Length: 70
Image (cartoon, rainbow, N blue to C red):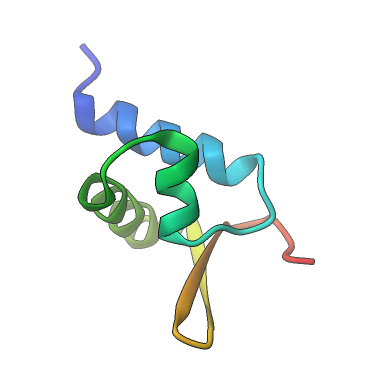
């Protein structure tokens, strides 16, 4: 049985896969999930070394590892 948390992680991962890097705010707008759930999912993906984080000013842009930011 797939847990709700795993579905959220997969949705965030899928959203990042179809992008060129996104901030949490952009992910919230695209997925309609709450910010807290997205932050938790990104932390898990970061811990598993599946995402890269790039700071641009005060914003953090999240990108799946293996993808190149243009």
